[in-house]
Length: 296
Image (cartoon, rainbow, N blue to C red; front, top):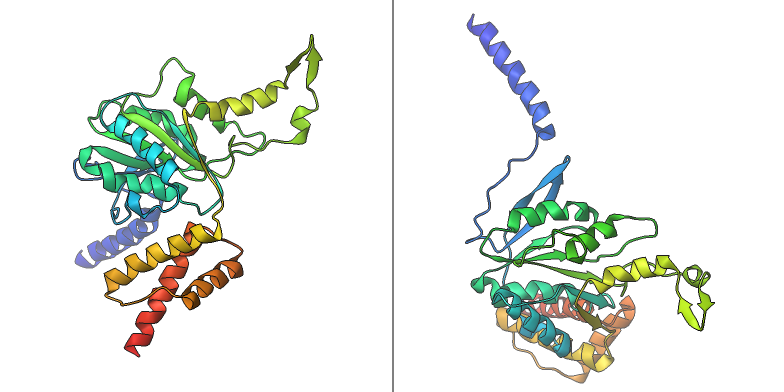
């Protein structure tokens, strides 16, 4: 009898081991008094919010050379956290210029005042109404963050986004804002063919309705912040900042000189990029190299 029972238990364990990867992952109830951020996961026809462990080591002061954009977004977020009217924000422009970092840095600034950040992927935007419904009655203030938002021709998900932002009878609650980053100002591709059907009627231009439909999406964002490619001077300023931060954390003594400046410029030329991401990567490379050589 014992041998049969043991055989049965072994077979049951083998079956469970094969089925376990197919079962839904366990859902964790989020304690928003402790969790500062979460990510929306789609599962079947629904989804759930998964809490994230986030680091608060990135501050608004670390974003160099984008003072105007930083000030405007910080002011809008302060209004939102204080329960005052605020706008959805679209951060658009050149890659690697600090758009995503600026949004993430808001947590260090306002997390203690009740700000929470929720990441939602562009492919999951159809779930926005479900996400908003879960947040509506909570006391915290939630920024839904969609990074690298854009749509290709023929995709219809952007209409869901339009309705949630401003355009349906059931609008987003007062404790929810959407911040999005994109390389495209209007989020959708604009083609020359869009202008082929423009007509002149009584001296007035009537653009193609498709163009109006596309531009209407970006119009839903009340705050537009533009980010532009770095000049060489701006790039080197960011390099110096990050070297100073990383070197101070590692106890490394260093000095800025012409050789270091040229090394940073060569690094940028080798990647065909001159932006904040490239500056940070060079700073990590250079500080790490100095520490390695000092140990040797």
